[in-house]
Image 1 (cartoon, rainbow, N blue to C red):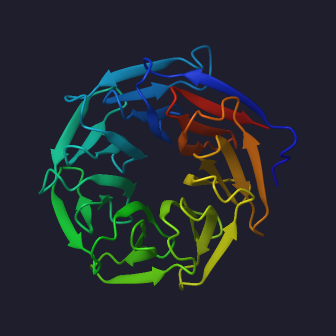
Image 2 (tube, rainbow, N blue to C red; image 1 turned 180 degrees about the horizontal axis):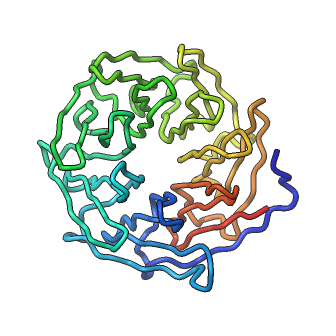
Amino acid sequence: MPDHDRWAIREFAVGRPGAGPYGITAGPDGALWLTLVHSGEIARLSVTGEAAGEATVWPLDSGECGPMVITPGPDGALWFTRSRDGRIGRVGLDGGITSFPLPTPDSAPYGITAGPDGALWCTLMNRDALARITTGGEVTVFPLPVAGGFPSAVVAGADGALWFTLNQGNALGRLALDGDTTLYELPTPGAGPVGMALGGDGAVWFVEILAGQVGRITPDGHLQEFPLPDRTAKPHAIAPDPAGGCWFTAWGTGRIGHIDATGEIREHPLPTPSSEPHGIAVTADGVVWAALESGSVARLTP
């Protein structure tokens, strides 16, 4: 259990002013990799050694492509969604960048994860669908049995299926590799689920940005919801804690929160309340990192 009275917070500037750090993940090289949503760039932030805190930035082929969520791929590269031009991007550890088009440019891909089948899976917000992308760029689209659901985050579950949030459908979904889909309506109306992560307990954890709650669903569909102390906090992204529970960003209040397996919630205010924390990652050493759209990355260390 983390001792929340002893955590220290430090911020590192990433990109030029207005670049907008958004998605963040730990790469296979031990560094953090980020999307810069406003400038259309990818950044690598060193976190160890003499170069700790130094960022390298690579521009994409379009500054208007809107890179969003980023994740490690099965091929040792980082993969990310480009929401504004309907493409999936790939960046190698050397900074080499390629991208692959989806069937429709306005599909608005958002969440992305490595699947259990050696491919990447992403949500298509404007198409009520998930897409499977091989590392060679071959795309297969899986329509969902919902209209206007706005699929957002997606993770690979402990059961070998893909789990996703339906932000406007007020539900969670499970997609088996054969395309079979099950939907789970949330108990709270208009909850607006967004971020999602596989917890160390084998359950999928998620955040409800409109209801101000954290949720948990087991592989057999058992749902729980945990209200935040401030229901206007607008929780956005969530990541598993190696010590148990999960960490999440509270975009509306400029805080980083932790929920343990019992549902107890503790929050840490960032130095600037209007910093707009979005993506969050927890490295193997238990250090917490959050991408702040205001222009930096926050580090929480015990």
